[in-house]
Image (cartoon, rainbow, N blue to C red; front, side):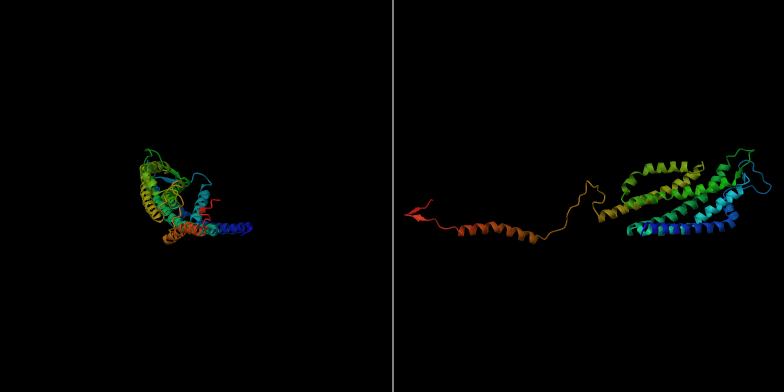
Length: 303
């Protein structure tokens, strides 16, 4: 296909994806109030006539004149991008798939089939942890102080938690894909388990927006379990690879391409016997054709 045709197809695919995002965004604008209520459920709001004193509750407000408009557009665009993801992801796949081999397509299907449930599980876990994390943070407010939170900050905090948990759940899947491509072995991952566990807990303490240990444990615990599941899968895959190819785990300097095709023994013996008989036949023929020496007066002709 010429370059112009590729560019034209890319333009059409992008146009279809953008139209899907715009359509879902328009629908989300209609239900933007319900979406903002859903995303801010983790904040313990103060009731009517109740004041925010200390860490009991918080008042969610708009701090600037343009805040209601900008937050509504932000929520609607985020909803359009997420809810229309099946459409624009399919358009992206339809553009890339014709250039992939059969094996690459198989790996891509497996990666997408596992990545979507893992990301959804991480996002759902983040949504469950959010109320606990918010209560822990609000409880640190000293007595006599009020918690007046910006709705934009609350939405940013919620989306950041969802993205962090969802992307962190993809780490074991990346390890499995590295093992399937032969870059990383299961034995090596198993030898790294102490450092990986320490790194996962440090990662959970740094990457989570909250400073409480609940968010860190909620993120590091499932990732550790998923890591050992990835190690188990990689070990089984290494055993399968060794059965199919004994030299699969060797380096290029250790393994060499040898011709192990068996040869027929009868043909080798026949060829060897025929080659051994050739000198004997040549010797017998030369001795039989040699003329007898001439004799002169009873003496051999030595000339």
